Length: 457
Image (cartoon, rainbow, N blue to C red; front, side, top):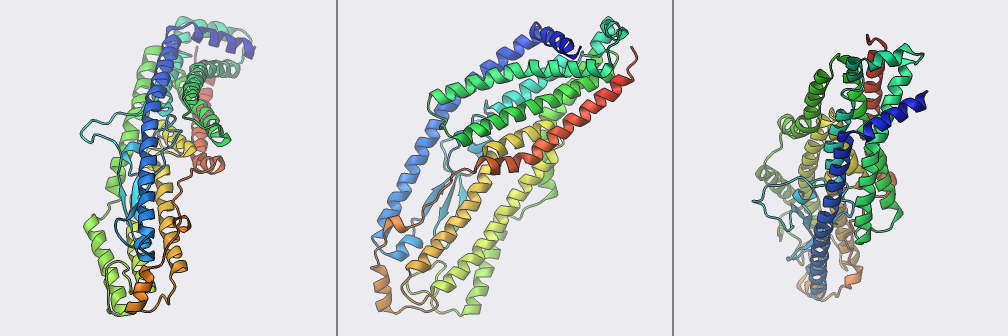
């Protein structure tokens, strides 16, 4: 009996105009998104390689002038955030996020934005999977379910079905499965075409981690679509008219897909206020002067200079960087608060979860920031290892001259690496969002079930 209901529901959807429009729209958006992404990603990779090559040349030039030039002398080397090959799934507004830090053993300056972009051009959302699934297929789910119960009640079909020995639970579950399969068809076709084009043009490396992430996002997308399918059934079970059901679902869709995702940041900025950068700079300078008084004035410069005790300069640098890093962490906390507020919307949960699964967006920036901190520490450790004198003492003129003549092998200098996290780490970061979507499904389906059990036909 369940099989017949699923098959009937599936055929009804496949033969409908709404399914045909959904299929065409998803295919067009997926194909357009992949074509645009290929050009954009190649340009990002070319710029990244050029920037990294220039930075390596800076390091090679510095090695000819001694240790001090390498670790504490301008021009400071720049480290860059690696473009993600999975940006076609969830771009995460990465073009609006900083992608570089200026760094040496004693300073981490930034973040900076070094990208090809026109700041006066109005920003458009990327045609990624998050947009296609999050907006188009969620709306299609409502379009396919708004009249599932109320519409059949109006035409008398529901009474005819229930006049037989057909359990209501079986009918409701059959409608849910049939709708979910119908919505999964354009999703799977669009994903396959999008991924095939990306792969054929050599954008997506043939590595198991990437394919596991793609599979995880595909399953996560089905779970997301299921939320709107169950919600559509729930609202349809609460109303006696399909037109009323449609109006209610449109209002819910606007709240979930448009209003809530755009208000989280506004609320977070009101709940958590950040100090201005001048205040942070003042705090860092005060800390620097406190350390100077503690260790004695002596010869001093804001950065480590030849002859300056290495340990004292390192303590000043660490203290200042702790203040700047705390400020950057406060910025990230504000973003996470905005995400937590917007998680009352399944659409926001889906976007945050996809970015976590593929490692883009704010997750990518946070990982980049943490690795930049670790890289500065590795440069400082390298400085201690290569420093041939007592790091707690001032150097005499002869020792300073000897320090300037120390040749550094460029291969020994630590190099920055922005390798993405593995699938297990990405899954752990997305686990909360997966759980929340599952709970949404459970609540909405139970609501639909209880409402349908008391539905008067």
